Length: 418
Image (tube, rainbow, N blue to C red):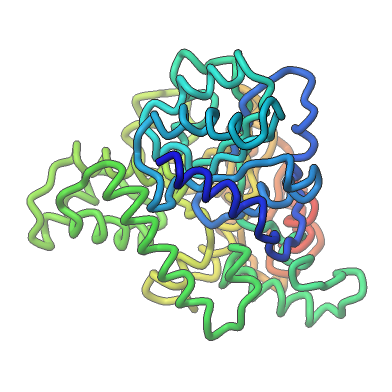
């Protein structure tokens, strides 16, 4: 093991970095953080966490860093490998302090105890990544609470997508902008997918999907019935809303002997791995919120356009999914008359914004149900800020006392970049 670690470290120091396209997420701003913290970079696999490490290494000097990917088959899943790592570094470089870039560290059981010791007893800086929310500050074990700072890594936002395409939106004609937006809407923002030719995009996504299901769900959680899991994911990809009961009944109708408890557990695994995020009903009643259908959103639009049944019927859903991924915290609203608003934004318990998604290019394409629902929600929730995010329509609609702003998707995506 010691020889393998030495070889891996020397390979890192000797080999050049790949070509790096810098993103808005800049780990360098955390490099000289005034309080010593473990910087944890979390997010769905292949969303750019590793290249964020490479970007940091380029800025501070690769020779001042040590990068290790713990999914390397040469590295055993054993806490002793981490203990040995510090000893190997001392042997190779004496008392020099490094920035340790530990990729997919959750593969090592008990890594938290080692991380705490490194932070408390050495002058090494520690950056770790993982494709599980178990690395997020709120879910870390007690021994690391207050010693960690969590950063979320996502696929490219639209501004970054344009940068990867070497496009300046200020210099582009409107048809070209809409063409690029349509590409982003369909193929999403995984960096590698964005950079390759269209014919290779599907092959790459297929590999991402297989690796995610195998490593982050099946192997990590020791799932035996793989068919239940894969069919559950298919149902979710083709269902913008779900209840545990309906999913369980659907799987039973396909011949699977499965319980609600198992389905609930599998969904929690998908959420924990950042594959999905869930929108709940806005209501004061916790009981009603738990019983109500939940909306489901995926980390990247390409999963929906690739694995759901009909892309042409999904443009509205793809828009809604994209908007959800540009919002930090949201709910949806629905009343007994089936008036519905896609996104309710709250500041604590106070509703601050009502947002609908509509694949509309003209006023005639704005569905009356969408404006009527906004008016109803505005009155009930006492909120006068109402928006419809459209495909490329800008303007206002006045309904009774409510002014509804129409915002093109490009403007929303560029303004909402955080």
